[in-house]
Length: 239
Image (cartoon, rainbow, N blue to C red):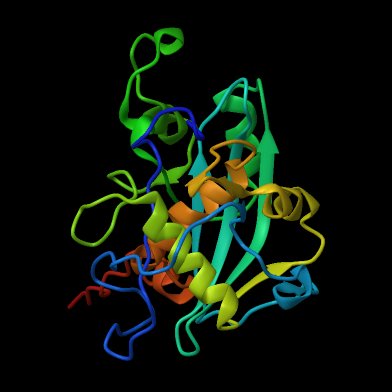
């Protein structure tokens, strides 16, 4: 759940390299920036905000989901142009004190989308007789990755994930639809204090980070259609 326990956040990051292939790095990078106080993303919104647009079917899609109750549950849709290695945040949902059923009803309307999620989603809750949150969303018809979001090597790092997002922002490879006001409100307030990220009001940004971590699992519509189409059996001839 967002920003409440150290280690509950999952992220993915590294510096650009032509050896990655398809835009996602194999392991987390070394962090080389000097971290002080102030905004985590000290860039103008105009550098990332773009009008709504449609994307070709060969662009891959994945969702990110961050669990909450008193603080919001949040979700985003991310579209990935693998050729240019550009990430687009195209949808967002943020709502607190709502049931899994309510959230799932909204997210199902986004279409066939697989969601990345954090480690706290693997823990059971008393309200649901110990059923993990990720499983509760599965039971409501959402496609969830089988394991919590992590680096390709299985490790977890908030700072590395933030650096991956910042590197993308600074290099023009991270864009957000300009009508997503809730997302931009978090973007403006996300900050550090004495070098440490303040884990508050970061639900959509955390969901975005899980999706960026999990770009290697993003799928295109053509890929989904290939595996979801009905099985066609050859017609048997009658002599």
